[in-house]
Image (cartoon, rainbow, N blue to C red; front, side, top):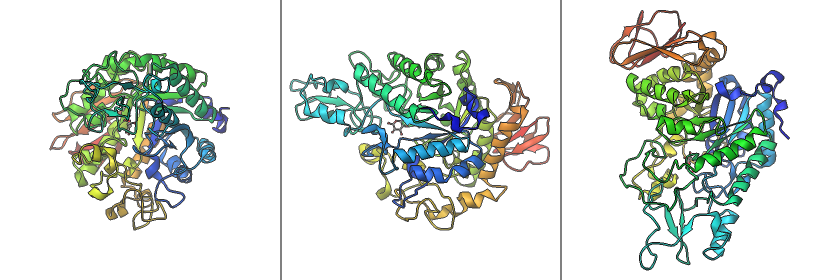
Length: 531
Ligand code: GLC
C-alpha cells in the first residue's frame, strides 16, 4: 500500500509536486556508511536525513541498491526486487522511506530496464539452455558473422569500450551495450515487459514516490541490428547522443514508456524521469509526451562550458525541447557519470568560484532541479591512483579511460581525517583525499561563506520568494561574455559574468550573489540574483 500518508497532509495532497521539486541524487555507495564496511548504505542515508532537510531538498533519487554482483556498482542488477546485503535489506528500505516522509522528503529510486546482471537467474538459465530456446529469447542472442560465426553479429561497441558482443560456449553471441556482465534484455519479449511491471508495482507498493529510468533511450533495438558508424566521437557523459547511432533512441522505445506510464497512473502522485541522452529537441520531446515519462533529464547544461553564450544556448534548448509538451525542464550540473563541475570549470579556486556562479544560474531557472550529492559542498573530481580505480571503463578501455570513479568519492561529513565521518573504517571503497578536511559538511554548515551556505540560502529563496514565479524567461541585452534573464512571472533577475572584466549590474536589489560585488559592478566568474 502507498504510504504517502506519512508525509504531512499539505505536502501529501499535492500530486504534481515533482513539477517544481529540487531532487538530490544520492550515490548510495558513497553517501554514508552505517555499518563500517567502507561502503555507503540505506541506514547511512537515513542517518543523514536531518542534513538533507536542512539543505532544503524535496526528494531523493537513490542510485541502484538492488541485488547485484556490482560489476557496474549496482547498474548490473541480479534481483530488482530485493536489496543487496551490502546496502541493507527490505526492512532498512522501508525504514528509510518512512523516515524520509516524516522529514517531508520524497524518495525516488533508480530502475535499470535496459539490461540485467549476467548473474540474474534469467541469464543463468539462458546460458544453460540451447540456442533458440525461450530462455535465450529474454536476451539478445545471435549467431556470429564469418563462415564459422567467429565474428560478432554486428560492429556495435560497448559504451564502456570494446565490442558490444560476447560469445558463449556454443558459439552464439549476446549483446551488451555496457559491460559483458550487463546483458541487454530483449524488449520484444512480453515476459520482459511483465517483469518490469512487477518491479514497478513492487516498489510503488512499498511507498516510493517515483523512479529514475536508467538508459531510458535504450531498450528498443532497431530491426536487423544494423552496423553503426564508427567515428569515435564521445560526449563527455557516459553516453554519446549521436542521432545516427542505431544503438539508442529507436522509435520502439516509446511504447515501453507508455507501458510504464500506465502503471504509474495507477499510483497518483508518483513520477518517472528518464535518462535521455538525446540532443535533438524534437526527439527529446517525444519522451515526455503526456502518456510517457513525466520528466526527462536534459544534459545540455552538463555539456556546456563556463561560457555565457554556451550556457544560454543550453538553457534555451532545454526549455524549447519541453515547450510543446507541458512538462517542466530539468536542470543538472553533475551526476555520477560525469566529471564534477568544479573541475570542469577549471578546478581549484577558480573552479569553485565558477561553480558558485553556476549554482545560482541553475537555481534561478524554472522547472526541476537535480543536485548531485557533494556538489553542495563544492567537491572537485578526484585524481585517483591507478590501484584505486574500479569503474569498468578503466579495464574495458585497455586502461586508457580512467572512468567515473573520480566523481564518486565518499562524502566528507565531519572531523579532520579521512574518511571524515563517512565510515568508521579508513578502508573506504574509494579513498577520500586528506585535503577534504576543509570541505566537510560540518566545517561548512557554520561558515556563511561556504558553498553549503550558498546552496541553503539559494534553495530557501527558491522555495519562498515570489520572484521565482512563472515558467518563462525574458533575456536582457548584456555585454559580451555575460547574460541576464528575468523570470517573467515573478520578476527575479539572474545575471552571469563569464568575461574577464567587471560589468555594470542590471537594475534591482541584490538578493544573493555567488561572490562579492565590485561596487555596482558584477565581477568576472560571478552570478547575482536581483529583485
Ligand atoms: C546509466 C548510468 C550509468 C551506468 C549505465 C549502465 O548511464 O547512469 O552509471 O553505468 O547506465 O547501466
